[in-house]
Length: 159
Image (cartoon, rainbow, N blue to C red; front, side, top):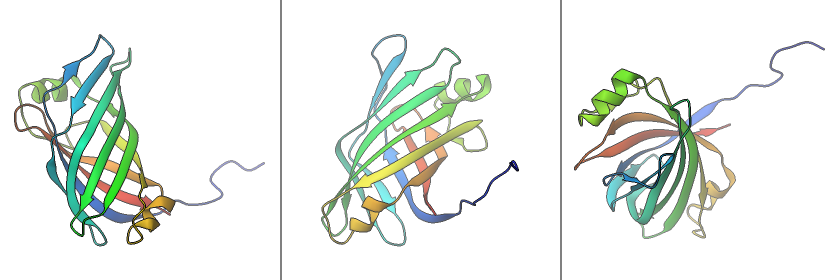
């Protein structure tokens, strides 16, 4: 049997999300909770709104130093609908990016070796029901920890 792909994956831009982060709460040596503040922004060609509470990010620190994300967000759209967004993902920092992050510097996707997510959506809104049937991927665009911390993602529908 011939090796190699028998199909292709394409993506289409869906949205940019800016998620305001509170200070991390270490649960134990392998789990960190990062509460999400209300606000931020969701903007794309077919959806716009803000992040509402409750929302949070549960991070598992693996022995390799990689972070496994378990994030649950509530989007409140500008036309008053609610969309539940959840994603898992993987982040891998270098020693340099981890040090810069701990100093409160803004990092971009060029600074962090790997930071990819896999969002899915759930809503009862007729306007946004199409989101229930898509798988998305997200890539971190910016990240900052601290008092005014946030994470910014560009999100794409996988086709």
